Length: 183
Image (cartoon, rainbow, N blue to C red):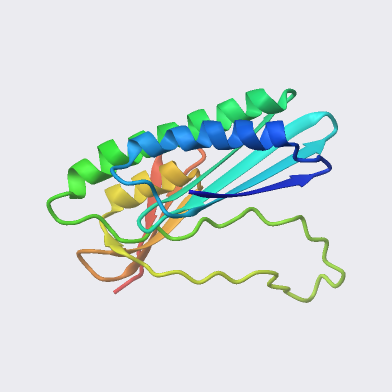
């Protein structure tokens, strides 16, 4: 894995870089072959809160986690724990069910939370970001698993049975909803 480590309001020293690379490289044990992907790490400090964001895009999986803590090294440990849980969950739940049929090749890229936008003109609708991704055929159960793994509130997918574009979402009561088009 290749590491791209950036710091905001923080200088990335050699010891910080070594610690991040050492911890994240432990994730390689979960893969048969070492992933040849870039590991994007953003370290930042705001109001005495250390924050780390790690994104590892791979062919069939997007790993992403972020953590905040008073201690940077503790935040790094916590984010690696989160990534390990994501990998284990992906390998056990999704692969077990879809190994016979073949798992989807790509999980759509995570929709990043957008910066707050104050409208200058309330009559205009200003689209500040557009994302494009391939919709993979799957059933609603796998879509819920993918959504939970990514930590999203919703997930857009192609229904493998009907071929329609569907959306699963997390309701306020903690259960899940499915949006289907009228036929």
